[in-house]
Image (cartoon, rainbow, N blue to C red; front, side):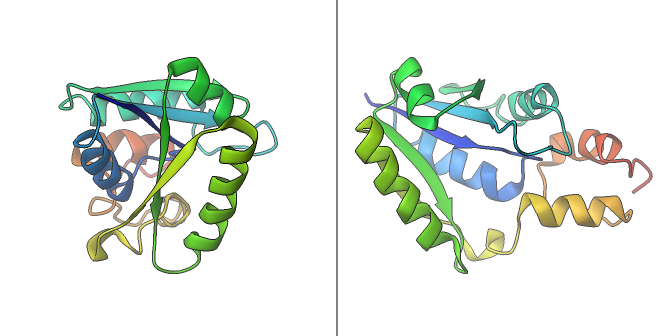
Length: 161
């Protein structure tokens, strides 16, 4: 069966990410979840923290492996033998950016991209929204995997919520 890769920053992992992981892992033999490091962006969580949170959240999936990569997505896909990238697409604004990246990844790396629309329940969840709510001490429990909610709150400085 095919190996696919779901690349992203996962800063932090959300229920939306987990929905895509669950759906994509059901379509392939192995799903590589690649925590991508962009040196031009300063993440709220370190790459090591993001990998650890994802490993905990994905523990129930027998065919999901979490890795970290700094560099081009197509190089990561090639390194892990992934034939296809998976990307989640929310209703507002994601399609154009993801479509453009899919074209680039096919052109420079020969890698196809599967765009998966998010469910209505996860459409408004984003890592940036989670970070902002957590920074002000708000409740992020409905937006992130329950098994990592407390760790995310602690890492983002809102352990009391």
